[in-house]
Length: 101
Image (tube, rainbow, N blue to C red):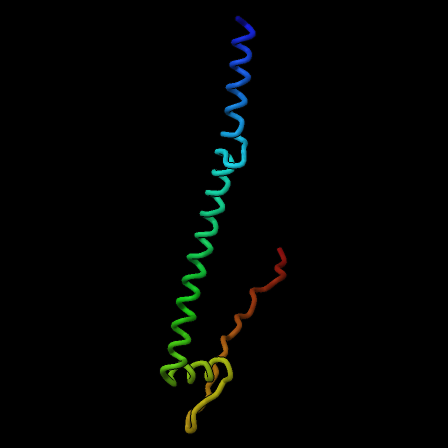
């Protein structure tokens, strides 16, 4: 009778092994779900970036306003009759570094 019980127990363990640790087991499924979640997060960030770049491309193709803005910001270009004024922030004098007590 003991031999039957032990053999059934061994068979039960043998059947459970692929379910938990096999190629398509629960642990692998859990790991894959985590990887899918990470990839979906990356994809959503990339989709936002693509939408922004698509808008930039459309602006550059359709009008001169975006081109003019880029020329002003990136290259410092100004129109004829305009004046370039640059305001620099003033640096505050540091408090006395050495104090005698």
